[in-house]
Length: 474
Image (cartoon, rainbow, N blue to C red; front, side):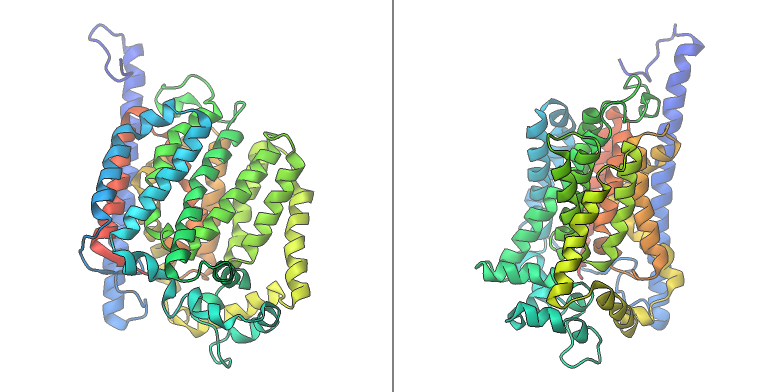
């Protein structure tokens, strides 16, 4: 029997937990409503500003998108997958063997991402995404000599430089471009292969988060049962927390932007770096030092995929705080140093590239986009990325008795807030911040199990609405 269906003969002591549960559920709805209102206000204010002076450079603020209701070949698959996940996802997450759950999480996230991308059709939604004038594939054929490309990379960042790079190539370290150069050299050239790589890799971030949550919240590292309305006694087991989070990770609205943008690839690298760091810190693998070194190598790679992702260090710090150890740090730093030394030896110095990029950033749209709008409009855009269930989960995380999951989510939130305040992320944060917002999604594990289907339905409805009413772009 539900804890919120007391019999008439129940005493006031038995009824009180039910009242507290209802009150917390009401607070969840209030938080979700406030988030929806924030997005609505950002839309109304943004459209007003854009119509007045055009300084936002957005057609449907706060998102980089434009209004075009449509359906496509992915529509039936997306609808069917959403219905099946809402109906059976929580039950499967409880019953599957752990390794089966991790693989199912990856596969489910991949199916959700593919189906949403195909709502826009094969060319517009998949194969053409990474071939626009701003994207990496436009520059792949220019890389004939990797050494020469690295030595001259910084010199082509500024807009007034001879033969300057396209926006996305200039806005990232050379590792991002070299990813697609590598695919092309391996015989996987073109937009279709690039999109498939991004979706497959990006979807694996779901598995990485499951691994992280299970390891970090294990051995008394979960949240207390009080904030899940009495459905768990004492400290939640790490695997239990991960299982509760799994359906929300799979059905996240973030999949709209994971497929197909290069930021999905960046998200996966960062997620697995955090997962390996967690496994090392909690000594949940046979060779913790190898996991620590692997984490360092992935964090190092991340630095050469996107400058701003150094802020994922907030999540790494949260892992170390929750695990109460600094043992992995020397090997993590060694892995990081290897990438900086290697690129420096090849002719690219990360710091020169970053400070040149700052100048390039303000040569473009960021030079006129108002900080006063985007400092809160960016946060409104994240509502569409993480969904209302995550917002409700974050509300519970704020009031929950401190646990590893709360610390992990706080690390993700710190990364988002620092990126926001920096002023180096004006618009398009729905994709740029994917590596940070990913770590907010597990907060939905704090929602009561009996309300999970309703919140999952809200997540699916949001993603389907965005993808069918808007054409998102980057």
